[in-house]
Image 1 (cartoon, one colour):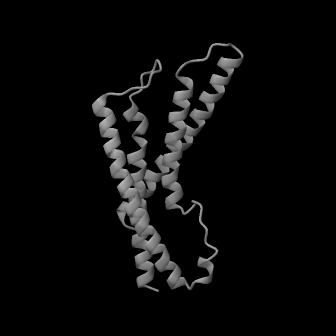
Image 2: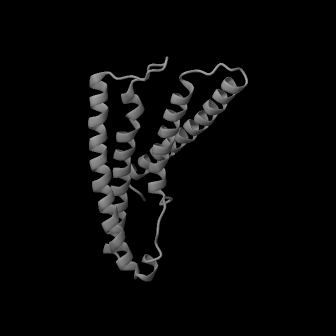
Image 3: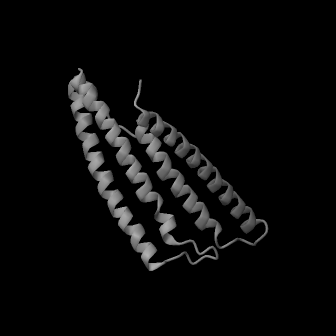
Length: 164
């Protein structure tokens, strides 16, 4: 039986994936809507491109979490195929540790960026006046969750190494 937090985390990632799909579809709809408004009705909105970009960025950063957990990201493993299973696991432990440090450092920096943007109250120049910190909020959220996913992966790899 898997620990309760594993199930909770799995459900959270399913919700994140659904949100990412919704945001991707919303972005596509917004782009299509703006094309129609601009080229058919000659009446584009000043906020269409901005909102499409924000929804696409949120979608991409959220789906990156799911891709990392399911090992669906780009891998160049031609050299790893020549290694033994144990050496491959050790290499993956090293890479996952680097990922944890990197994502953690970037997440910390992203938190600082969001705090600075919120402190200064900067907002977009469009009629929506979306605060910039909202646009950037996906960065620390996705990076912290990628850090958690990587920690989970590291624990699994250490368990695998120990029992191999």
